[in-house]
Image (tube, rainbow, N blue to C red; front, side, top):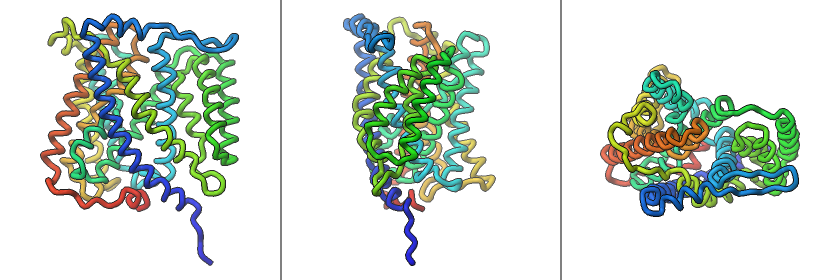
Length: 411
């Protein structure tokens, strides 16, 4: 009798999805860079007042008592970004079940690197802000990594970059996302409404029932996901977490050999990469640089963020990865050396999207939010340039004979 592995078709389907992910995320990173640059230009032009006024325009939606009245900026950060977090949830679930995190052998190195890459930046930020307790709420800002931005920089080097290095960066970023989601849930949640939380819990149970029944249609997950988002928004818990929770209910394998998780992930990528993230970047990267000097850049809040992203990420990722390899807990992927891991740690210092997002949760004072933007933009820019230059100097000039990423996922 021939044994049939029901998971194998799913893994085979995920291989092309991973390649598609890398391509779309890297292209999306370029779009994000352009959107952020445009926001900076407009925020420092005669159109600045119109730009900031547009973000403050109130937008009202809902029926009866379910009215939601928020400025446009908060609709982007709470609503549009929930779609981004839904996609993050899908990616995390896929990686945990059939991807780079589905076994200890594969997950140990990125896990240790990501832990160091979150802990050391946070510690550095705290060290720089010990004398300014009003800034302490921002400790998690430099712990984040922007995968779209980082992969966009990798794309500039083309086929010289080993697939194993891209996969390692992706795995570190996915674990980083899990950490960021946990931090948001635990430390950036306001007072909660128990009734709304109960409504969210019931909705999530219904979503889970659809997932356990392996319902392949996207419709129930989308419609119930919107209901869940409303409940979570009104509960006081940050609404974007509804996206992650809904994604966890989507089955990776449906009936009749379907792959609903992979299909939804594939369908969402263009919208997230070329609409959601660029719109978020455009809405949040705009900061007036008038009067910004060295005293502004070296103030504790922006300096702590920039140092965390640029120095903390290097020390944390390289240091914890080195300890994991030397202790025998993990090993470097074939074709990846320590200089490439060092370059990866620099690219992981591009915090941008998630760092700006956490900054908006941490501070309500516009002056502090602007300081966050300056710290994130300066630290991310230096990390991107340094990471690119180091990779360019250490990678071979000839094309690397790269194994198929799908094969690596099945190793």
